[in-house]
Image (cartoon, rainbow, N blue to C red; front, side, top):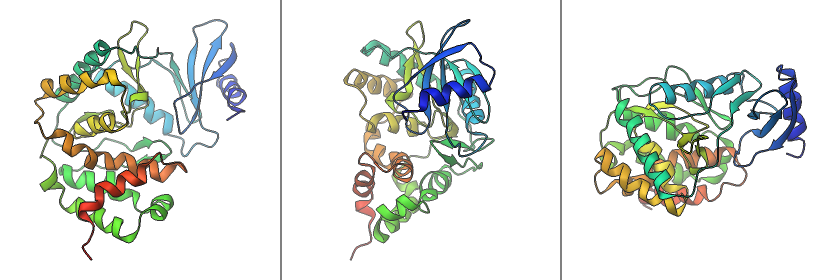
Length: 294
């Protein structure tokens, strides 16, 4: 990571942004190197790159996801300045303000996205990326089958997941997948951000909520809600959940479903990082009622 500013500066110059003088490292991201680049002839930009990209479509897919959230769902996103196989360059957003009003505004924005983009099919017209792993988005008319196959069971072959979960855990995950129609309501698909933890919620220069780092697809709205709910949002965000529930007509049992939906993200973290931030323990706790009886 110490070489990231030099590495990013070189990538920017190679891409034709010759007026970039310096790059300061940015914090918060986990999969790629990122920084804020100062330019002589234009405003600063945010830049992101991989030392070794997992594929040449990572940033193109991310830029497309930002455009979809903005154009189809009305969410604010950064402007895409450049997106190619090596580099993603965006306009700079602000840190979000620590206020309940900001999170109430975001509840309205996310509700508009979810309520205004419903459709019967689950998936997306192309695969995209969740961190350094491909997110498979093959269309499916059955939301339970889509979530089981492409959001949960797909992680079982990953080496870190195989090492962390025993045979009983894996059998429990398969059993949970079989029972998804009993455990979750049958809801339509809608456009989702797909990686909506609190670090991916920022603010526009005018202070309005904006989002970054999507892994979009059409799936259940509660996938986005679960990610925020279970990844330690700040105290001022608590009003967000009440407002979102009121706007979308969520039943009172929605918090009970969050650990099941968040299995997808915990499995993704476990698969990609040596430090799983407690993901393995969370997975085992959620799967415990589904383990085979001995």
